[in-house]
Picture 1 (spheres, rainbow, N blue to C red):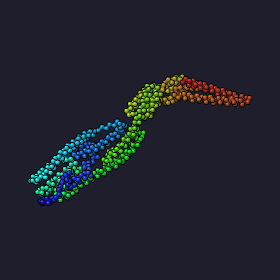
Picture 2 (cartoon, rainbow, N blue to C red):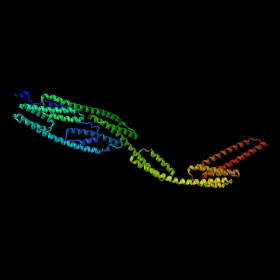
Picture 3 (cartoon, one colour):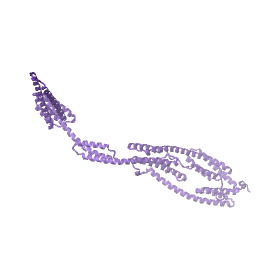
Amino acid sequence: MSKEKELLGNDKIKEVGKVGEVATPVKSMIDEMDVHDEEHGHEHISDLSQLSKEDLLKMLEGMKLDENLSKASAMLKQIKYHYDHLLEVEKNEALSKFLANGGEETDFDYRRDNVSLKFDKQYDQLRHKLSEHFLNLEKDKEKNLTKKNELLDKLRTLISAEETQTSITSLKEIQEEWRKIGSVPAAQTQEIWANYNALVERFYNNRSIYFELKELDRKKNLEAKIEICEKAESLAESGQTVNALIRELKVLHEEFRNIGPVPKEDQEVLWNRFKVASDKIYEKRGEYYKELRERQEQNLEVKIKLAEAIAGFTQFQTSRIEEWKQKTAELLELQEKWKQAGGVPQDKGKEISKKFWSACKSFFHNKEVFFKHLEVEKEENLKKKIALCERAEVLKDQTDFSGTATELKNLQKEWEAIGPVPIKEKEPIFKRFKAACDHFFNKKRELQAEHEKEFKDNLDKKNALIQKLEGLNSDNNSNPDDLKVIQDEWKKIGFVPKTEMKDINARYQRAVDNFLGHLEGDKSEVDKLKLSLQINALKTNPEGGKKLYQKEKEIHRKISVLKQEIDRLNTNLEFFAKSAAADKLKKEFYSKIESAQNEIDELKSQLKMIKDAENDK
């Protein structure tokens, strides 16, 4: 037995699937990588929760599919997940505003903006390309599998053939061709690589004459793997992002896997060194995802509180529009806080989001019911206001300005007491009612303007008569006929401005009283004349009726007093005895009775004058 065979011993390396599997450090390394990937899973996941739709669109537009398809696919899914979340929030916000402005959910039609349209188009294109790439990749992998199986057959033939000078060259050619062939289907990756490795080992073990070449080759492999270990150690200390570190580490693992075997005494040490460097990177990834998870858990706590805060809105009810508006503003503020809270763990995001937005929809449903009922009331109010418009339009051309003005003012009070009408009818119905009222009151104002001019002219005329009467008083030659003429003229003059009425009548009455004070002649006749003139003057006074009534009461009181005096005198006459002194006293009593009776007759004459004056009115 040659020295090389003694070194190799009798161990036989066998192919997987043929006569058994081989447990090599490289296989352990692959298993270790799979464990790390299984533990940490989302090596391509980034914290995209703080990005906007525009940012996510830029990421899509910048994606390249000619590098790592698995990474691209995972990233595409993450981008789509966060985009869908933003879109859902955006849609719910739009629905909330639509409902807040009085819209109905059944009428809501959410239209995506240009960013969303571009995103959908870009996403569909990338997904289609990925599907094609993966399909082509799988086809290529099947072809690669066929090629590698053919190389395995060649390798088996080479191993079973007699040893020649070109055997090692043939092996190198097979190895070179093997490296050039791309990936095979994942299900066969482990098996075909194990078979290849086992056959290469068998080749070297069976060809003892090339043992030294084999060792030399293993030493070269050792140098290459040491270099990979150094790169991994350097990579662990670099300041790159976690995702970048993981991508580069996977490349190093792939290179480590494809390099051939190293001396057995170095296998375990070398693998442990590479594993330590890899674990540092995996630890960084673990810390990164731990921090990300902690942030997401904090965000979840915020959103849980927001969901609890908004839950009370589902029971809110009020009959006041302003309170609905205020509550809506509070809810929209909570929605804004929800939007700013950031991402949460995916396994809990849907549940809390559903709870929050369901409460929002419940609130807006209640609000919608309230405003629907309010719309019914508004329609009823509209009918009432239309009826008021019709009544006002009937009154607008009436010429009874005083009575009609009162009616229209009452209609205006009714109008103010009626509640709101549909917003689109508010302005037209108000204009219609206002037009009818304005039409009447404008006519009334025009007539009042004419009256005001007439009243001012009347004021000037009455001032002239007062001046004329005052002139008569200054002549000290009062003629009752002059006063009668002035009184007749005064009566013919119409109204004066209301603000001047009291003053002008007081001046006129003073002038009349002054004139009567200057009259001379028989007192009885003068009194009758004064009374006649007073009565005539009172007829022109707006309060003349009241003053005549007061004068009449005064005369009745005087007559009553005189009659009581006559009765007293007649009673006393019965007690006088028959004597000269008694006769004299009786004579005086009879004279007093006659005088009182004459005064009563005079007062009755005045009373008749007042009665006649009242009847003339």
